[in-house]
Length: 164
Image (cartoon, rainbow, N blue to C red; front, top):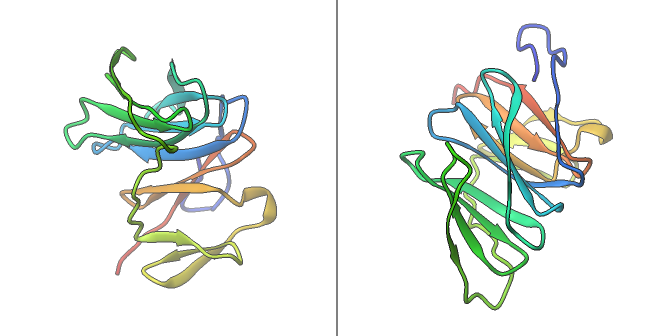
């Protein structure tokens, strides 16, 4: 977590044993889900900056995570070729969807993207260059806060006023 007025790092969310490859904010901005090569999903309480719970059930890495618009479901897609539906408030697995012949990747439309030179871009404009140790492999944007998932297992946050 970053202090937006000073740009200083205040807290880093650490929990996964391997790299983070997907992140998603709940619609209300209270939770962040992070999916990892370690086959788990971690749900983070953003108001406290703490791990709320770890969801286990996939047999290979979790490639994509997404909250339903009402926040009642969390979907996870995996290299195990399944989609799992979870209750984010309890961590209970509701359903496993099988039948895919390939890994489950989400279709992503980012207003924010990462260029090869490791710039964070917003609507095509370069806004932030990241040093090597902070370069992510996935990201999510909610209410001006950018969550960056790293292969180290770390999730970093950057607060930015996107006023376009």
